[in-house]
Length: 153
Length: 176
Image (cartoon, each protein chain N blue to C red):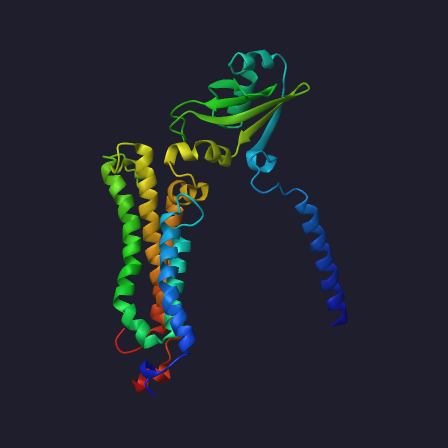
């Protein structure tokens, strides 16, 4: 039996096809409004990953892998960390010898020290969100992978 | 076996009692003036004439020497707590060993003939200066990503490491 041809429930598939984009939109809202209200990188990343996990559960792993290829996933997970550490490194470079690692105020986004810090916090949250999302999807793929089905493919 | 269960029951009851006893001391959620959130008690001093000195913004010599003896940061000036009698905020000077700027550090309360010296908890500074310093209204976020940036970087590394170890342990198809 080919897993790609398995049919799930039509009702569940239709509803989740409509819901998934909204879940992802909500996840982006949670990440970007982390500085204004409840939310942040960890939570938004978890919500984003849960939308993909819903997709994989409702459809199947083969289709899920087409949507989120493992290579992209691995690249995203380390890219988030690179963004975080890179923002820290940028602030170290722009602090001109003071070695203020992760002191975002020195990066000249705006003319205000405090405004720079706010933007730096947002960037860092995006990095955290990317890593959390990619790692959660990757762990789910690894746990959901079925040895028997893979051999028959 | 039966004796074992009886011991366990007694221990559970004792532990429950201890929890209820301790829960009396837990402050209300989000109350910035709760004693355990606001300050840490350091020591008592005999007041003497220090009230006048403190009211004029000076530091009594007894207080300075007591702090020096205990190796706490040395004070620079005093200020009355707004709206309170017999309470003072004491500041530490610029470029102290661990603080670059002048910070509100000690809280002195006069009760009877005793001066009670407290140190402000970090949370107080967080409440008062967080929004001003980072332009981010959410206290949790600016604490997480700015004041504790190193901590969050470490947490992200932990998540990344967990993902990589799951890949190494479970992903065994074809080439690694």
